[in-house]
Image 1 (tube, rainbow, N blue to C red):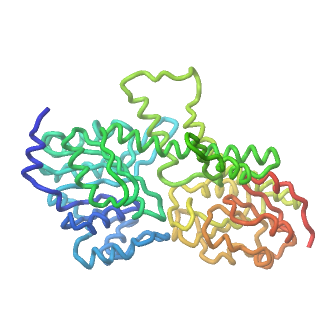
Image 2 (image 1 turned 90 degrees about the vertical axis):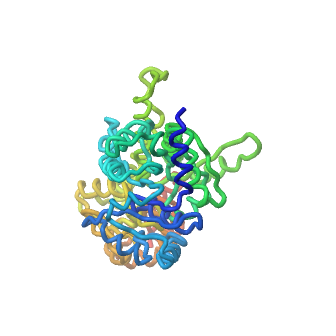
Image 3 (image 1 turned 90 degrees about the horizontal axis):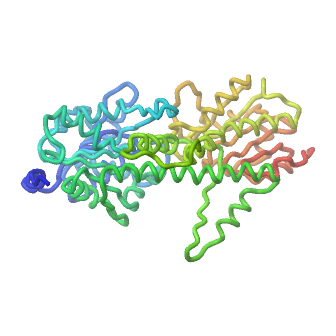
Length: 478
């Protein structure tokens, strides 16, 4: 093994100046925590000055967060580090040459999941920008979720081609996948264990040095770059599988006329040594950037593997099947809507639908790949009218998002709850009835937000995910 990189890093000294490419849900909190550490001198956040996202530069340099959900502590931390002069956002990628370490937090969607072809265009551009200004002794870390073997192949090749340097000899290269969820970004980075995988020991050790200072309760778990890539894609795939299991159980409970939440509580009650019965929550669908595509990164990694896969012949991957179940839930929400309207002798065509919640997760503005979108498409294709309310999402392509829930609900034939924003938990049947002006208004609950009996007793036609005990209730006349 060559000791060239180890000697270069020893001569360079500790990491003091860090860059983060990608000022989004991952990059912003990461940059803020790096800048808040007394181990590091300065942090640069890199953001293209584009028409769609260039506004973030001034906001961040003024200590303001462009993330518009509830993100505890982030705004205060950004103000602190900008006032201290420890953080700066810039569109000037040539300043990468100033750094000791740089991380890339760039989205990696799939252009065509069926063909297992990811869209690495933005990531490749980011890696090329790093390669152009790469200097000996720098550490490059991919935080983006990627197909296993990407760090060792694509990233390495681009960096070496652009810089003329050799990974593992002249510079360090690693994968340290993000493990955050919106609404708890800072806490997740500090408290979750950090997976760190370098292409060699020197790269791994340098990446451990980078991430250790920002951890409070979490610890660093070192491994190879490919193992780190598999860890990230697999943990999201497992979560998607668990959600799919809960969603399938909810569909079963509806078919059998029972309450899935009773069953869930019963399953969850079995605890003790050697017993693991963790069960997640069913709902209107799975959204976000990660769970909707990381299964396909894992599947693609198998295709690129060094050995043939030994698996039951002609059997579908249980992970891909789980994706299909979760993708079906917005369709099920549509089916519940149609069935509920039929109970009051209404057709979906021409019906007025009020959708509450566009973001894929509660109390957040994260609207990446929301399950609300396929539902919207089905509703409009069926000839219904649709109004959408979300208190956090500011805009979305080709969707008018209302900020007044009363305006959204007014005159509606059906109110459909897609996101568990906290304000929806205080919905009152008398208020909705006054706004709709209908004797019987349909209400579809995709997140177990409301008490069915209160609405049923007020004359509503109710249907909810997993509520087989209530979905065929008698209609109460008021």
